[in-house]
Length: 537
Image 1 (cartoon, helix red, strand yellow):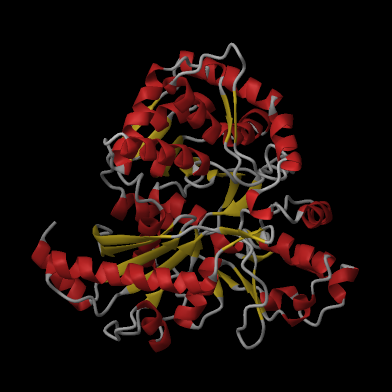
Image 2 (cartoon, helix red, strand yellow; image 1 turned 90 degrees about the vertical axis):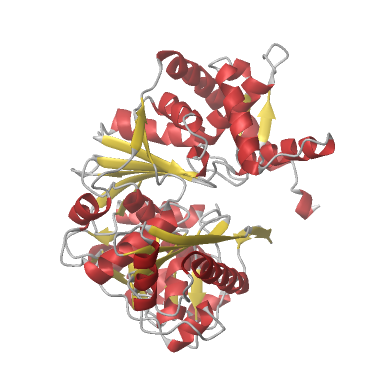
């Protein structure tokens, strides 16, 4: 890249900032008008299990954003020898779903209930039956209705209900809006109007339990916006939240805030019909852009939208890499103890590579990576569980392959419904996420698990924050164009990617693992019932 040209672009504000609050990191990516990354940074954080609720303290949100922005400005100064004072456009993304209610004065009424919570089963079941449309436990409307069924006192005072991305956007811009993709994980969207489904809103309002409250649902939900629309501007107060030094100027265009599923679709160029992508991290989910409606309602398949409003079949697994990360962290401790400490990248690469020497069925080893509950496998309470029999072939290679299979197993079970029962076909399936920073290994295991060709782009490790920055570029400079055309013509015109096909041995080995995994699920379910959490002891 031309350093002088990019320095001039930074000084002139011809840049876009993507901010994403993920499960384990708050990330920022600054790009130019060509969507080339100029600087990036991240701030590590973790959810907490408090009183049985997976949550994040909103004060930590702002500590992390401030720290990340400070690091970003330092990176810009170091690389380009200019100060970051103006930004052309900003986009906020975050984990989808969950429950963030506020009163008329902006006071938070309940701790943030994230997507990870499996505490809304009664509400989700009743609403799915009422709407004839799948409402998963993690959706915002399920959390709201469960709070109503629980007769929680704060519900009467709700004036605004939003997601984490919607909350941060609101604080930066003063606007109570949401990208249509993120909004579709709060309440079902009507594809034709781009608004919340009117018939389902009416059904919800007609419930006796809901009639008792002074608000109307549509009045407390954020306004959905398709990609390319303006979501307001960065206010003076918002600029101070990002940069307490006062150097950052207000006025940046705010793109509609999106969920991490939407930014994943953008960063993999998978927004056209019959395209698909898979994101893996703390959770794992596949997004398949539909060219026809699903035939039936499936409790393990969500119907959400792309950032420009097209319907998407989403298979979402609450658990993916958290247990794997814990094991690799322990191996790192051992390496330190024997005087051979390794960088995280070296640890992951070494341990992933050894899995290539494994028996393709992981030698009879099983791993249930359920740190939290898992809807797809009907696990109510997570207890990470490693199991072997006396005649399992226990070695490091098989252990690591069992870990990788365990990461993808719930996603595989959900994808089988979509592919085998619904016959959904995709022309391309692109994967992204931290598991693919080590080349080939995770990509091949995923291809073997799903029995599908898997493509990984050079942007696989960046993912969401870069995708949000791309949406901010689109909103600022290309909103007159269709999003899919913008991505094809202006962003991914010469993408670097690699595609791996499933191997016969790997596919058959994974099938054997999955069959044993399914047979042992009752053990995982019982573990949640019988083994108390250390925090509760």
